[in-house]
Amino acid sequence: MNGSALYETFARAPLAFDRGEGSWLVTDSGERYLDFAGGIAVNSLGHSHPHLVAALTEQAARLWHVSNLYEIPGQRRLGERLVDATFADKVFFTNSGAEALECAIKTARRYHYVNGAPERYRIVTFEGAFHGRTLATIAAGGQPKYLEGFGPKVEGFDQVPFGDLEATAKAIGPETAAILIEPVQGEGGIRLLPAAMLQKLRALCDEHGLLLIFDEVQSGIGRTGKLFAYEWSGIEPDIMAIAKGIGGGFPVGACLATDRAAMGMTAGVHGTTFGGNPLAMAVGNAVLDVVLEDGFLQAVQDKALAAKQALASVVDEFPSVFEEVRGTGLMLGLKCRVPNTAVNAAFRDAHFLAVPAGDNVVRLLPPLTVTVEEIRDGVERIRTAAGKLTSVNGAGGAS
Image 1: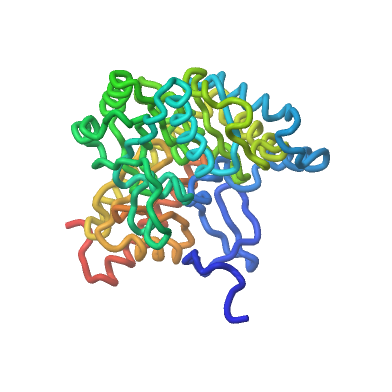
Image 2: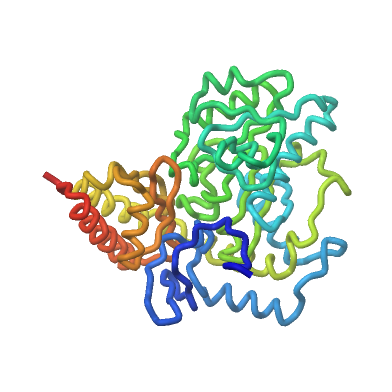
């Protein structure tokens, strides 16, 4: 056999980690890296959080899997807690964000079907979006690099320019079922939709009898300083897909919906073998135990403000490397003037981990439990990396 036994679909960094401790990852040789990648916004409570470890090990000693042929008490409990904390009335548990989006798409289409309008299946989406890697979700995202070579694009998605309300209104027709949007684009480059735009999308949906779907796979579970980003906008979606942070590193996703939106999702029309299994539910409930504690989300907001202010000073100091700070909460991005791949590599050399994104941005997605001291440490590592990039490129820093 030549090379690795694995598919060659990942351009992996030449790093392997042996263990994690809070905001840190440690290699088998003992090198420590400050982790502001967070498994791509997954490790919401950092690495090896004791409450999550205890919940998982306790459940693993009792029961791993039974399937959805039977009642799963942890699933019922987590569903009720998510309903109590959000706009939703119903929850369907999945293993991933892409599956949560598939459920959201099916829920919206099925809603119109049971209401006597089966022709209403099309969904308006936005350029720069990322909704997953299944055939339907790459069609929803619409990015050519993800669609190429996989046959005909799944029908039913109409893309409009990011944040263009007029184009959105024009895209709505007699076959339109829903509008699907990320309140903050993650993979697209930490691009925020203003609250006023989200409010206008809600009004458009109400005017035309559409469902509004939010993709909060990356922005949810405290990442923006609220439990979900929609809470900043003053409006509520009809359907919402979540994942990543709700499992704190364990594969968990969910589709949340109002009773009205979920009315077509009756017995037998959708299913999952692993979704909502006892292990996943134990961890999901443990994550909520921490995130819903009094003061936790306020602390995220406070740390986020400190991080954004410190990063703004680095942008001012190295204008040849960085253009601006983007984002909200602990979902931040640095728009780069040099290739973001080079910036990310320089960060890695400084033992600091981040995540490249679209629009030449590097994402900073630390655990919500990151300390102010670790934020200062991270900013100093960014400064060190920027200084080296400046000298390599022969460009000046702040003038």
